[in-house]
Image (cartoon, rainbow, N blue to C red; front, side, top):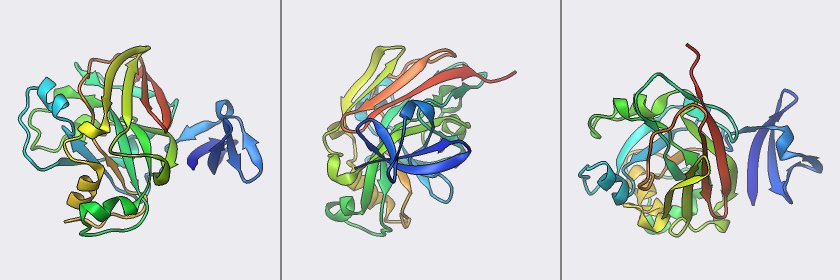
Length: 247
C-alpha cells in the first residue's frame, strides 16, 4: 500500500495513492493540485541519521570508518515534502544525499536483527542535504551541517513494508536530469535490520520514528536553480528545487 500526506484548501489529509490519484475515502485528489507533505509527521517523532552508511561514500570523502554505525539526530524542522523548495544558505559547499528512509511502525527495544524488520511500517525516500563547510570530524554529530530548515525532503509516498525489500532496493539521484548516484541498498555498511537492532540497544524506537540509512557515493555541489530528484524502485521519485536564502 502507498500512503501520503498532503495539504489542500488549508486542511491536512492522509491518503492512499491509487491509480495516480490521492484517495481520501472515496474522494480523489489530483497530485498536481495539492501541497505534498512529508509522509511521516515529524512532530512528536525522532529522526536518526546514519553518516557514511555506504563504504563507497566514505571512500570518496577519504574517511576511515569504525565498525559500528555513526549516528546523529535530524531536526524535525528540516523535513519538507515532495516539490517543496530547498533553501540554500550562504555557504561554500552544499550537496544532496539520496537515501532510503525507514519508518518504524511498532515500538521496539533490544530487538535482534532477525526480528527487526517486523517493527517496520514502511519506507520512503529522503534527500539529506548537507553543508560540507560544517563537517570537520564525523565523531562530532553534524547537526548544523544537516539541520537547516528544508534540509530533509522526504516522500512523496510511504510504501508499506510488505512491498519493499530493504536489502535490495535500487537508489538513484539526479541533478538537473544528470545521474549522480546509482547504487543498491545491499551495499549499505549496516543493513536496515542491523541499524534497528543497534539503535534499539539504547533507545526505544517509537511508531513514526525514522532512520535515514545513509547515502552512496556520487555527491556534488548544488546551487540555486538546481532540481534534485531521488528515485527508489517501488517507492517513486522525490523532487525538489534549490533556491537561495533571502538576504
